[in-house]
Amino acid sequence: CQNARLIYSYNLALVYKKLNDKENYKKTIEIIKSTTPIKYVDYIDKSAIGLECFGKNYAIETINAGIKQYPKTKELYDAKLKIYTITSDQKGLETTEKKIKKLFK
View 1 (cartoon, rainbow, N blue to C red):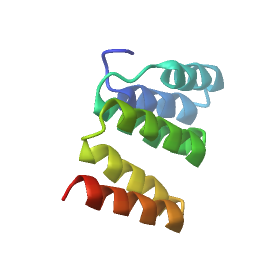
View 2 (view 1 turned 90 degrees about the horizontal axis):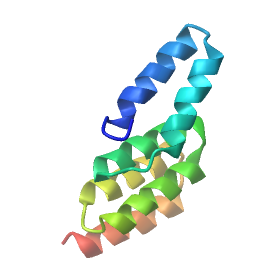
View 3 (view 1 turned 45 degrees about the vertical axis):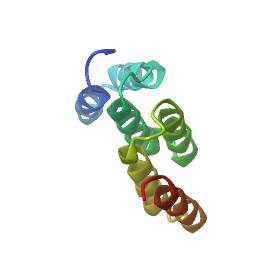
View 4 (view 1 turned 180 degrees about the horizontal axis):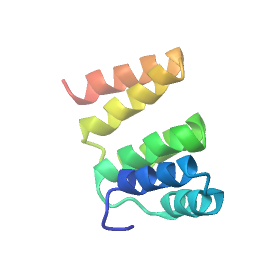
């Protein structure tokens, strides 16, 4: 799983879920959760999956870890905006928009 995009593993998990194979679904989700992202896109994938499976806080923690590793990567901030938009978090949205304007003039 380390070298493959996490989203592919998540798609596999969804197949298990559709087949009502709860054991393999849970195993696959746990593999995703325990995988350490390598590229910035891995953080984006993991945060999107995390939002769906574990909630907003997990997704934001994951994106923030990605931002810490890749502070100049605008796509991570865009993903953070998306999380705040989906979860209707106006304060988080405004704070992140200000940060983006400051960093990416």
